Length: 208
Image (cartoon, rainbow, N blue to C red; front, side):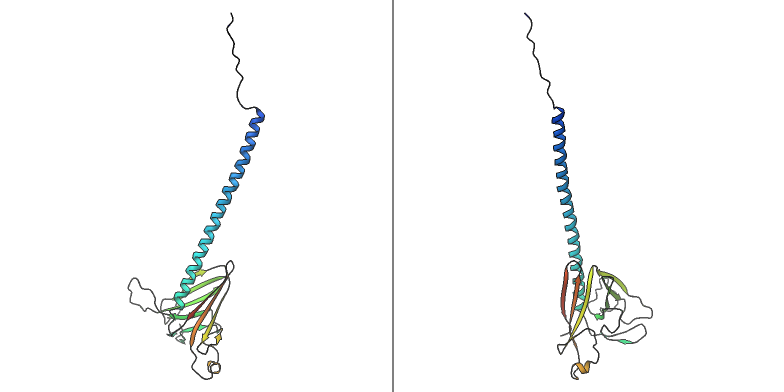
C-alpha cells in the first residue's frame, strides 16, 4: 500500500497583490506626509504670530513707560542751546523728543533718574533713542534700538489745556491759539499702523 501523499499549495502574494499593496502604501504615505507637513506649517505660522504678538506688546509697554513718565524738565543741546522738555515736529529729525522720569538704576550708580528719549520712524521701523546725560556734551551720541518693524505709519498728536489738538509741540503762535492764556500740554495720542495688524492707538495724559 502506497503512503498517502499530501500536496501543499504555495502561499504568498501574487505580483498583482504586491503591486496593489505598494500602491495603497504609497497613497497612504503621501496623505500622511501631507497632513504632517500641514501640521508643521501651522506650528511655524503660530510661532511667528506669537513672536509678533510679543514684539508688539513689548513695544507698546516701552512706549507707555516713556510717555506716562514725561516730566517738565528742559535740557541744553550739544551747542548749549536750551530745549523744551518736549519737542515734536518743527523740522526735527525725530518724531518726538522729551524728558522722562523713572530711569532704572539697578547698579545704584551716581546719576540722575531722568532720561532724555526720542522716537524716530524710518524704513517702516520705530526706533527709540536715549542719551546718557540730559544736558549733552558736544558730539554726544544717542543709544538706538528698534522697537518695532513692519509699520505703515506712526503718528502723534498733542492736546493742549484748551482741548485743541496740534501736530507739533510747542505749537506755533501759542498765545493766538489760546486767546493769550498760557498753553500747556495735557495729553499725547500715539498711533501705530501695522502692516499685518492694522491700527493701534494709545492716549497718554501729561502732567496733572
